[in-house]
Structure formats: C-alpha cells, structure tokens
Image (cartoon, rainbow, N blue to C red; front, side, top):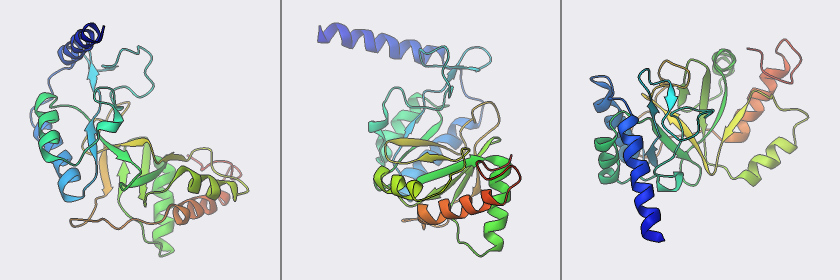
Length: 232
C-alpha cells in the first residue's frame, strides 16, 4: 500500500512539474539569488511556493480549482520543509526555477502584520513622522506587510484581547504561517517587492509586534470610517 501511494504521489509531482510554465528569462536566477540571500544571509527558513499553471499562468498548480491564493502557498514540499540549508534551496529552485519564495514565519524567523497597500503606505508615513522605528516591509500591489519579531499565538491573543477594537483589514502571519517574499509574482498580478529591504547580514532588527499593532490600531481610530478598519 505504501509503495502504491508513493507511486501516486510521484505521478502527481510529475504532473505538477509539467503544468508549470517556464519562467521568463532572467526571473529564475533572481528568485534563486533571493532565496539564497534569505536562507544564508538573514538565516530565514524558506521554501518554494506551488506556482501557477496554464497557458496564461493564471491558475494555481495545486489540485484545487478554486484556490484562494493561486501559486503563493506551500504544497510539495509542505511548510514544515522550510530550511536555511543552501544546498536544499539551490536544489529546489534548480528544479522549479520560477517558484515563488515563501518565508515560514514564526519560531526563530520573523513574523508579520499586513494591511491593504494604500492604508499601509499612509500608516508608514505617519509612523515615520512620529519617530517609530520600523523593520523590513514587503509590498505587493494590494498589501503591505510589516515584519516584526517572532511571537506566539498566545502572545498575539493577549495583545488583541486587550484592545477595544482591531482593524478588520489587519492580517497576522505568525507561528505556522508563511509570507510571500520578493521578487515572487504577486497574487492577482504584479510582483512582490521590498518597500524597505533588510539591511546588512546576520540577525535583522525587527520591532515588537505589540508596538506595531498599537500604532496601527491608533492610526485606524483616526481614519475616516470609524476605526473598525483602516480606510483603503
């Protein structure tokens, strides 16, 4: 039975590989270089996303025809395979050159708080003006993600429970989660980019999640539309 299941899994892997279109010229080396930088320079565990398929690369390569995050999620390998081993990272992108880069958040790796792009840009301008120190920021055409120190789900729960309200547009990428990193293709078109790239090598400075959430909740309270969500 185990042998039969193994053969079926291999056939599924082969099928997925055949469905993935070849990446545009120049994209593959950039993705590999970026994945290796994450793994070896910043010591962040990464893995390849499932990618997209079809002539127009619009469909997710996973078996779910209604995938909510086409191409930008783990599938094979699963999230637990994320690593900082440069040999494994090189092997993955040698075999799947156009695969998106996923950061496995939590543990010793950064976590993130994300919000709609327009609201994120306004919030960052205000926080800079107030003198708040921010870490790396990942931007897509639709959302900005502020990287923060690792936090547990229990700690996040305590922080949110203490608030009278939390913007419904905030999303949290913590333990057991993942974040799409540059220069991966973005969901819905465009490309993921660094609004603020990590500086230097080794351990990257990150703000505490509580400070970022406090600041974003405060900013949302003064936004038009009440305070239940950041305006965008």
